[in-house]
Length: 80
Image 1 (spheres, rainbow, N blue to C red):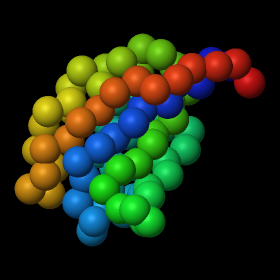
Image 2: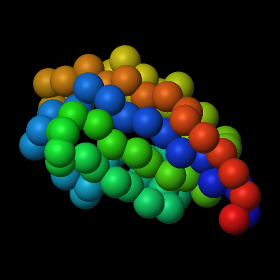
Image 3: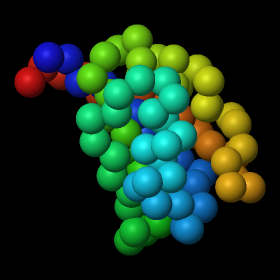
């Protein structure tokens, strides 16, 4: 199985894993969401397919969410 991980930067300190699961879930099945707390302001979202990750990245990069402008980038891929 191929897993594609997205870096999500520029997020509010108030954003939770559930917020991001709801937001990114519109573009496909996210396998895992991790939100940094120390330091805050970024997260990683892992998708099962490259197509879903690409759709999410294209749609959400530069978009505002909870009054913050998101920066979404593909960071890695690999097999499992």
